[in-house]
Image (cartoon, rainbow, N blue to C red):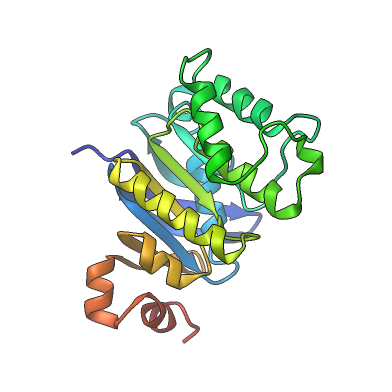
Length: 236
């Protein structure tokens, strides 16, 4: 089986500061991988580099066998940023259709899929985004990452701003996506959700990988994600 994403010896710098140091991993079809670390560990820098939004100082990244940021790697990739905003003059449905057409122009399933996502995330399709609550604006960003049936989902702190019931719904949706063969990579500080949702976890400390293991191995060797995080990520 061919990896969908390959990261080899990745280094990301901001001036003289190394945010990511010698990071290597691959993502296979159907994997759901939690990218974990303390604040400043390099999680967002890694995600942005995979998306082609962050210059790579050293090493290489391929997405679907191509350089990040190229259209052929973009069209089958969905992304929800930790912070961001949608055009507030559009309705929820107009926005999802706009994003759908960027990925999959004039596809006959675009409208149906957008409507289903809006229903799942409990969003009014005809309400303008400027009138959404803060939590609803977070949910529309998650919804747009899933339009056009992407093969890869990259989610940066997707649980931020969600109420407990919506966290459960998102968990159910991500598990369903994994069962459908979608590859999911997401960062989170809510370790219990990573343990419930992911098949594998990658842990970073000060830009370096300190653990890359399947969830069964983490449970066997450490007792769970929280214990592994405490042992591997906490300062020495």
